[in-house]
Image 1 (cartoon, one colour):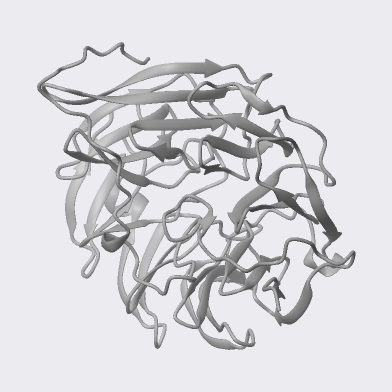
Image 2 (cartoon, helix red, strand yellow):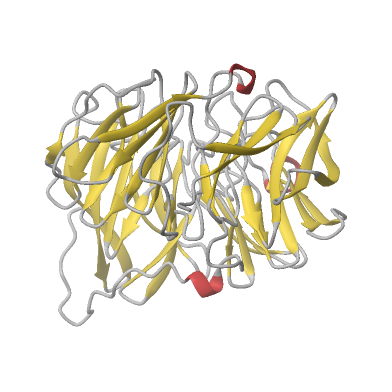
Length: 422
């Protein structure tokens, strides 16, 4: 459970920093990792379409034989990366961003079920990807050659919280690669990003296994830390040595803790489905590190993000509310009050959400794409269209907005739409 923490005047509260210069290297409009340059679902591009035709934006190209999986994509320096299953193989795949043509494909593990969920992380000449069974690989972005491997289960004692296998996307932070094997002795692990050597392991008692979330990084009170959802709840560990700083269990459920937390200054917003709810935590410096204080808690019938994620734009959080639902909402982050409450959108099922140029891109489970104005003044859907039927359902992979394009991963295909104003 959370602890109520004393204030220490001698320790000034520092602003949270995502430190983009320490993360994956890319061009300004690229999307080099899970949920974009800063792992927050935000694109900084401007000059994008504010309305779409009824049939959707212009389709530039369709890449076929991409493989099975719910992974999203990374875009960096003219290449697209994803991870998929083809026949009996789990592969990391590189495509030419200008036309979708395959550049290389490298096997890293055996195929399983409906495919992997990890989004590759690109860092200079290296790309990192994780199979469903926790087989981590570092590959050369030019050739696809494997530089090193690490097994979460065999080498790090890892385990998942439930049956859908590993889904995280590893984080690059400076010279480290941060991963979540999920075991009590190594809930999080820092690896040397060049060699795969273990730098530290973060022990977390009763961790509950790895969640389906991905790590984010912040700094409060001079303490740099990694934050993620485990099976037992949300935790923060010291970036220098993996020491557990704080944990909060109220929004944990026993099935699947999925959405990536939102971090802003000293605040952490987290939510999970299965009626667990949502909470805002304040990270408070102490004489021994950092603790988390609950600012508010919202029950699951008020707000829960099952999967699809949320974005913070200014003082507000936008996303989809409901278990297996994507009901659009706008929440004032610090107060926990709705600017506009959850309501029915144009699609059905959960909705994956990203932001670009004043607009929210909602991708619904049933294959509907919607463009919604990101404003606290009220729900204002600008456009919607149905993705081609061959994209398949459930339509879960998160959309990506990069270099004037909207990318949609589907059933063995990747679609590239032109969303740049001309």
